[in-house]
Each structure stands twice: as structure tokens, then as C-alpha cells.
Amino acid sequence: MFRVVLAGVTLLFCASNLSAQITTYVAPPRQLQPSPQTVAVADSMRRDSVNQVAMRNMKEWVDSAAGVSVPARDTATVAVVQPNRTVTTTFSNGSVAPETASDLPALALVGFIGLVVGAGLLAQKPRG
Amino acid sequence: MLFRGALGYALFCVGGATVAFAGGRYALGTVRQEEARQAWDEADARAVVALARHMAVGGHLENIPIVSGAPVARLLIPRLGLDEIVLEGVDADVLNAGPGHLPGSAFPGEAGNAIISAHRDRHFARLGEIRVGDTLTTESGAHRNTWVVISKRVIDADAPALFRTKTATLTLTTCWPIRYLGSAPDRLLVTAKPIAQTGSFASVASE
Image (cartoon, each protein chain N blue to C red):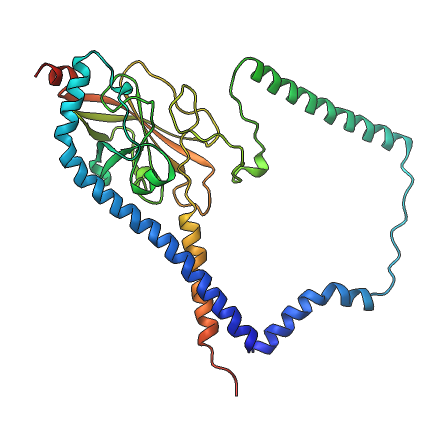
């Protein structure tokens, strides 16, 4: 059982090297020349997106100049704690809620899983 | 065989150390909360005298330097079965021991916004069950206030949440969602307004 798992892990790590040895040549798809209309549309979209970024930055600049605390947010990183995140330790008007997030539950769960898996590995009798 | 044994030992040791650390922190918090509860009873009388003396010289409670971690209030939420001693400060050690009173905010019963925060996996584990209309009670020095919950909302952790108020307000905060592994992205804010008060600093000062 353990040998099978070990072989699987070895294959997993060596898969990229092995595939480099046995993969046959695959012709890349032909590059199509974009038509002038496609180039024009792509250029227009690129300029539109640049304009949006400029508008967004302008809003943040105006907010900061007005003294309004609007922290920049990226919806893709909601759960990530920023290292320079403001931590409220004393009350001030408009401050964020105190940092009550705790990693202890996750730590305890990860530790428990490690403990159980480790005990399981140690308890397995050697074959033969 | 050797690899499996080494991996097993490593996982067992690291897992055990991690569980021991987390369990130790929980145990330490429980011990500190019990100590705070005992200290609260003993310090109650002293706090009343200190408050009375301070008010007699015309000061305000927010000017009293209170040591971080000192018990400053008692919070009771009957419907949730919550009865905790609130400590001064919101740093990690204080919040591990009990709900923390945000320094600089009003004390419960004073005019202004009194802010109390706690961890969602410990003292405010059931705060999410609170409803608008529920009553809370706080004891702080000579005050015993009864509050009614007027709002309950979830906001982003980075959003401005705490504001000064002219009238007495109680704000409880914790992380949201309650059941979340890792650093929770939002905050639960419960706001309450007083409906009854017994005792006052003025009455104590005049005694």
C-alpha cells in the first residue's frame, strides 16, 4: 500500500520531466493575422480600460484629499489580511472595528488533522 | 518504511504542538476570565470610590488612566446566557481573556458610544443569535444599565464602523461570519440604546 502511494507521489513529481521525454511533437496552432477591424476594436477596449483605471484613481485621490477614509479594496482578496491594515486600538470617530479575527480555530483544526494523520501513519503495521 | 515513520513522527509532533498551543491559549483565556471575574467583585467597591472621587473633582471618566487588562464592566445578555467581565483594551492578550472595552470610547452608561469587542470563537460566539429588541445589561462602576438592541448589521472589516454619539450608546463588535476558518473578512456590529439606568456617577459623587 505504502509503495503504491510512494510510486504515485514519485510519478506526480516526475511527471513533467517524463512527459518531456515521451511527448510527441504537436504543431502549434497557426497564428492568424488579425484583421484591421479586430485591431481597432482591441485598441479601443484597451484605451477604455485605461480610462476606467484613471477615473477610479481620480476618485480615490478626491476622497483622500477630502479626508474621507475609503480604504482601497480588491474584491478578489477579501479574506486576505493586509500587512499594513489599520488596527484600531483606541477609539476615534470613523475608525474601523477592532481586530477580533482569531486564527486559533484554524490552527487547532490543522493541528488536530496533523495529529490524527501522524498517529495513523505511526500506527500502521509494516507489511510482512 | 523509514520515510513513512519520519513523516508520521513529524506530523504527530507538529500537530500535537499546534493543538497544545491553541488549547493553551484557550485555557489561559479561561483562567484570565475567571481571575477577572474574581477581581471584578473585589474591585467593584474600589471602582465606585475611585469614580466618585474623580467625579467630585470635576473630571470625566474617559480621563481616568485605566491599566490595560483591568476589569471595567460586566456585560450580561440573558437570552444568550452571556455573562462576561469586560476588560480594558482590545489587544490580543486582552481579547483572549474576555471582551475588551475600546480605549477612548465611552464607558457603558456614560454619554457617548461605548464599544466592546470580543472574539467570535469565544466570548461572543453566540452574538450572531442576538435579535433587534433583545435586552442587555451592563454594570460599570456605579452604573447598571439596561439596553435594547436597535440594530444588527454586518460590514466589511476595513469599513469605517465606529462613530461618536451624543447620547449613551452601546456597540458590540465581533468578527463575521461566526463560523469561518481563518481571518474573518467582515465584522458584526450590534448597537443598543439604554432603556433604564440605576445609579449614576453624580449620585455616587454626592454620597
